[in-house]
Image (cartoon, rainbow, N blue to C red; front, side, top):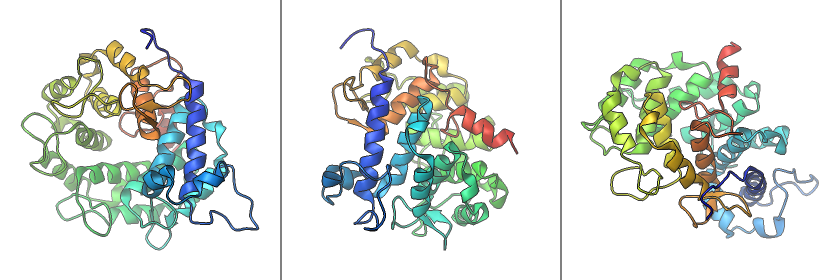
Length: 347
């Protein structure tokens, strides 16, 4: 690959729009629309292959379709191309995943509600400035109802506890201006109890430090104004040691670099003001060398197959490094900075 790689933004936009359309057709209930109703542009293309229930797209995206929408649409916004999709059609599809009886969102139409997909739904609606379609208190009550006595959060009614869900709950409620519905101090106390001697955080108290969990905990503490609980130098050292010889970042020691950690590691370093401890030039080159320059998309590492997940986190990493032409991204809310400013400055 060329030493001086550049971001092939137009190819990535085409790839994302295609994936968004194909997976929404593939993962919609069969048939995806009533016979008398024409398919929307968000559901339409490649129906002959995408509607097959055993297609690759259907199998891998079936349960996380709403997450995929968030990854793809946020990438489009970062590349100044959110207008490439029809906002009304996207919002209609998002709301088709809503469970009015509980207030939560499922990962796809007809799937059970979970806090993970509820955050993605709220984030996408924030992108389009359409939180007005929500019964905000109903959604907030669903999330708040998942807080446990020790301050932790379950992901859904089945009770799995993880610091991911703490971040997700706090982020969702903050975006909805409803943090007052939970015990914030207990939520913070639980996250702090998951801090390790190396400065990092795990999924539970005593759990291994991992860059993904660290983002969740640092992000939650940032949202609640509680970053003083972090030893910034100790955590910053652990995070900057995630940079490998090829310039990429890994999630924990002795693992290969992976483009997604360009977000998980960098966002935490930005929030604790230690991002200057890594070599941004080498990381930028690593991300750009993971592009499919012809067909678009970004892979986990060079020459592997691309996917929407790594495309988003690769572009997100470039955003945090202020790459030309990419909009700035808020490191705590994982949304474009102008979207976050609109949410909190217009109130």
